[in-house]
Picture 1 (cartoon, helix red, strand yellow):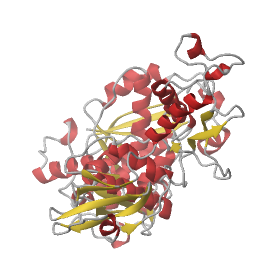
Picture 2: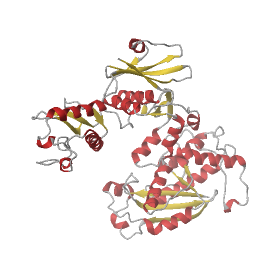
Picture 3: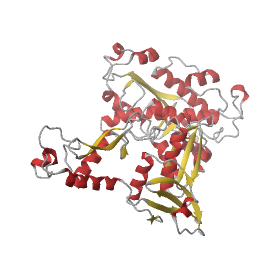
Picture 4: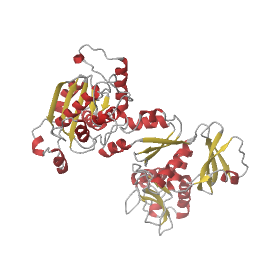
Length: 493
């Protein structure tokens, strides 16, 4: 049995928007056997642009039931059914969030009619519900209302179940005999199937469609099946071949499967997923090389859906200054590209920078007031509980206090000025090398088993140079805190 569902909402983000209308049509594989539709009171105002799109006003939902009042009905109607929708991740994510707010884990197998339509009716100019229905002759009344869209989706789904190159003429003379889902591929199921037992091929095809519902509709399943279970960087491409996202993983196949399994959080994330038409990759062997190369590629290519690392530095950092009394002061703040002051370490946001500084203050017995963590005209709190030695009130001289500040700064810098990280290569016959010289990242490269180096210049000749920046320094520092299997550090000087 299949539950064809459509929702109207106050916006595109399940984490903050709510459902204003729901429609469910139960399909037994041959016809619609049950239906349910109702407006819902979202408990918040409907934005004007949503009202303009759907026609649903605040007055219309003011006396409508709230979601918790129909939740049992939704559970009971969809129990044992495959959840079917056009762009299924969007509707499914909204319902899951509504149920999660009630403390209930709503879970159903899903099937996407966008992806199924692309498989069974290839070559359509558009696979949006309105245009697809228009092109293949399916009536759609009440566009952008839950009942109208769900009913059209149910009719589309019924047509997809019956498609066959032998006994049904497809629009524009299209032939679907090459696809997995032919006449035998998708079949009736449930009580109304008139005791007709589905063929193994039909069952397999339905299972395939359910499994592939998580995948982007433009992406062939064979692309995902051929992904390597190895370390490297990967690229998501749109239909034009443009790179729209760059990622990295120690297991590319598993990481990309995780991408597609995540519930849609917004219309932008749905747009991103629906744009993915191809995936390519480059193996790196080393996790550190993958991290460094990903950061370089994001800054160089600026893919549309990579938010992190698109700037040359993180948006916050720790700064070193000297006050009028001669005390070295560590302070956190916003990293502004227009500001000539360079942070000694860049961090993801001011909250992380503040937490990082708190840690250094505690570890190196620094003054909270001098570090901007305790606003007061007098002594800091730590001085009152005998954890600060009195720099905040001039009791500790700058000379001794500044020595501890220098220790804190040294702990932020690399442990050694010049070193090489030697790790796994792309094959068993090679090694990866990452070179840091005089505190500056120089780049990475690969050498075979016969390579031997006695001096730093030997490694320098084996790498390709890349740009150093605060992001790169952060990546290397964090990576060196944990030893990886098959990896060692060779120190020079």
